[in-house]
Length: 93
Image (cartoon, rainbow, N blue to C red; front, side, top):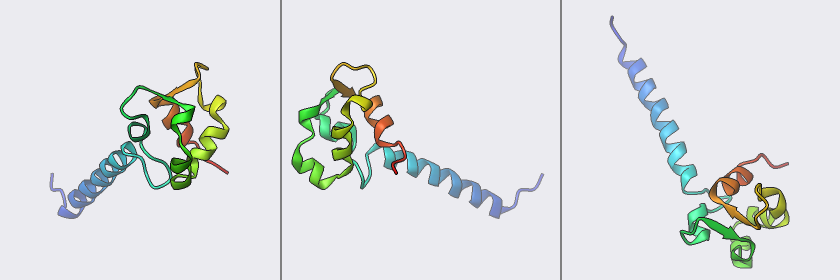
């Protein structure tokens, strides 16, 4: 079976784009920082670790602080990486 080089190039481009999107989202984006960068490598993030300086740089963190109880799915007062990423990637109005 003959495969056109164009199809091969297209497949490589699509795979590369998908990989880039995963890598870029793993490190945060322009709208919000990665979990590790604000938690300092800890597994949990406390509300007061989201400083006003971070909120000014990333306005989406203000929304996180305002809806902390909604983001904290297990209601332990802290947010883990899964809870953080789930809340921050929700579509906002």
